[in-house]
Length: 298
Image (tube, rainbow, N blue to C red; front, side, top):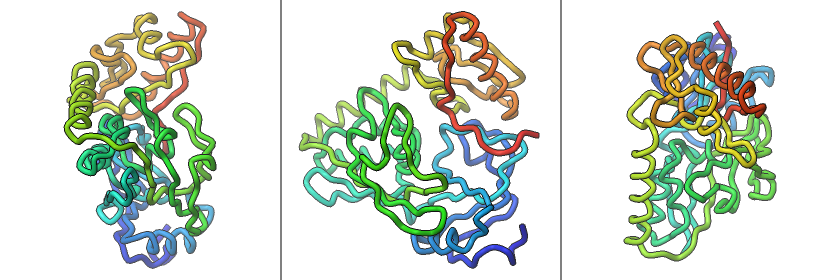
């Protein structure tokens, strides 16, 4: 695809953009095009005029993602600073841009004395990502706090979807294919900033103690099957510390994989599939990926 075939934009378009620096695993190939829109109207116009056959993917902080080594054929949309604002608009309601981080949302809630959003402190992603995935941790889920969200559809239309419209289930929503979340409203409850901060500190300490946060990782690898914990199934199947190439099952938390230095995305994905096979053989349970895998294998 050449530049002349792409719609005119006000934001930034980069050809053959390396994605490894933008994802937590620090592996994988390039995007055919990386688009960083100036504002919602810029994104709408681009998607409206883009060839409908061109694949489009939104990229947040790249935490729950394996970009395969052959890269992504199409356009990766990254929502930058214009989409990273968070404002308290009512006593218990926050208006958040799709590119805002979980840390920014929870900190803004604390400053506005809004409780109930502390768990977002522990989700290593952006509003767009955790609205799509019904992100959750430490007793909270996005479905519990979301009022509605604004999305730009693949045809460029702007729509507002309620939480009910998304038909949330565990780590899943029915957000339309190709839709990009550009804003969301969350409702908490009245609270005391000091108490909210204490809860955020507790969550932060618990994550630090139990997860390999200093490593190149992708967050939780597998969804918890009904009645089971994924990490325990992985551990019982003898996979703690298991390696393929430069990819390793974390010794600290067995539902995390880490890039020990020079892992390819193929190494990481193969390790995940090997873990799934061993868990299936040991317990008869099918583990399902929580990490999204995109792009082309080399």
